[in-house]
Every structure is written in structure tokens, then in C-alpha cells.
Amino acid sequence: MERQGASRQLTVLEGKSGLYFSSLDSSIDILQKRAQELIENINESRQKDHALMTNFRNSLKTKVSDLTEKLEERIYQIYNDHNKIIQEKLQEFTQKMAKISHLETELKQVCNSVETVYKDLCLQPEQSLRLRRPDHSRGKSPPRPSDSQPPDVFVSSVAETTSQATVLEEQTHRDGEC
Image (cartoon, rainbow, N blue to C red; front, side, top):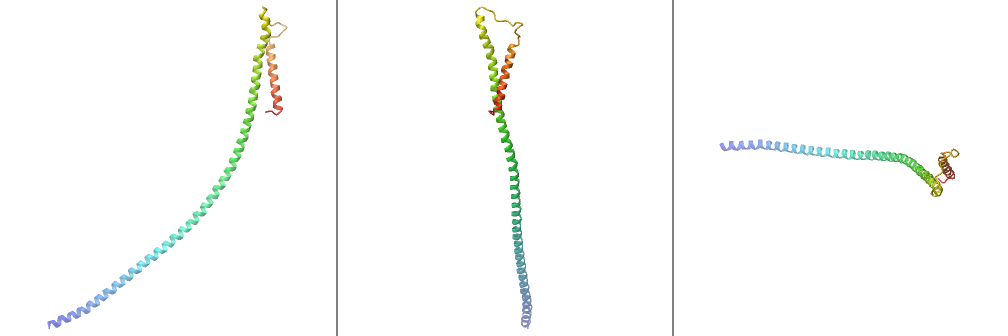
């Protein structure tokens, strides 16, 4: 009897355990299905995020490309504006350099004229001394200024030489040799 009771209990237990294990199996299946659904939801969400990032990247590339083109156009416009200013300044510079060159040529001519006048001035006293030396070497004393000959004769001859050099310089300038 005891055996029968134990066997009955075992059968009851088996029936209960079968229900328990089947319930446990269904809970595990439900959990696995839910886990699979969560994984699929995560993957779908990641695919959406990836698509969103791809669209964002493409949109950003387009906008950056547009902005880059506009910036490039603006830079080239600024370059053109600056090139015009630079060309104007170079033209002014070239004109001023030509004027400086012309003035340098005129200055050289003036210096040559002054040098010629200076040489003429230096030669005149020597020539007048040479003319007077023979008289002086013969024992005669050099002539002294008298009341009839004013003492500024030498000055007037210098003024005449300077005046002649100025007239020559003006004539050269008018003839277009500068």
C-alpha cells in the first residue's frame, strides 16, 4: 500500500511537474520571443539611425558644398576687386617712376650745367692770370683797379657766364632733349 501511495504521489507529482515544466517552457519561449523582438527593435532603430545619419551627412555635404562654392565665388570677387586696385596702384607707381626718371635726367643735366659753369668760372681767373702773368713776369706789377674800372668786373663776368648757361639749359629743355 505504501507502494501504491507512493506511486500515486509520483503520478500526481509527474502531472504537476509536467504542468510546471510546460509552464516553464512556455515562459522561456515567451522570454526568447520578447528578447528576439527587442533585438529586432534595436536593429531597426539602429538602421533608422544609420539612415538618418546618412541623410544628415548627405544634407550637410550639400550645404557645405554650396557654402564652399559661395565662399569661393566671394573670394574670387574680392581677388578681382583687389587686382583692380593693385593694377591702378602699379599704374600710378609706373607713372611716378617714369617721372622720377625724367626728373633724374633733368637733374643730371642741371648738374652738368652747374659743372660747366663752375669749370668756366675756375678757368676764367686762370685765363686772366695767364694774360696778366707775362706782364708781371716782365717786371711790371699787376694792374690795380682804378676808378675807371669798377672792382666788380669779375662778378659781372661770372653773372654773364651763369646767365649764358641758364639760357642754354632753357633752350635745351624747350627743344625737348630732356
